[in-house]
Image (cartoon, rainbow, N blue to C red; front, side, top):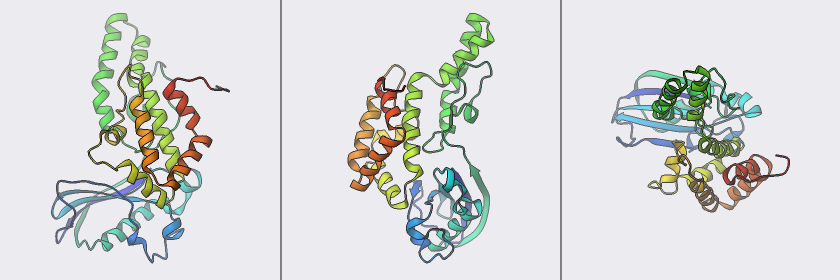
Length: 279
């Protein structure tokens, strides 16, 4: 994931509702007529806007590409300079009069990837323990939330056994219990699906994802909190079914294709704890 963000102090009200955060704006009107846009409006590598207003004249804006690999990751469209250029076009299109720019943010976040060797003596936490959400790039909420749990596991193991190795194993188990590993398989599948979606399919995907703003499923998905210890992942299954039937026929066809040829079989095995050939 790559992103460029900046805090703006505006001469006039910026127009974003104060007290609300704009999460993912995949609109492309600002790219119409852009001669420098690789692939054109329909074929470009999609990026979206985050907007976080502080007050009527101060706002943080960020242009983000959610996830990329291979040819997309190497494209000129995903250079930081292109993120800056696209955000500047958005700002101009929105008619925002900038008085001052400050607190620039440039970020490149590793997404997915292999897990560390669980149970090893060297304990990792945060990004080093691959705790970045594979489908969103979020992590801070999770590492803050689970830090007391991991610290308690370490302290209990050291007090009970006096063994650093046992303490490390207990901490790894607290970071990556079975139900979180199952959740990760769903998030990795979501990442794999989004890797190749064009802007139209991404709009379909997130329109289905955010269909009901009051719904708990998408909030729990983004928070990495869809299952609890010892629970069967039924809520994950319900969420997947809802996503499928809420999507357009074009999106449904794509989801079926991804399920057949990417990580869909592994995801089903993980959720339902089913044996499959060639396991």
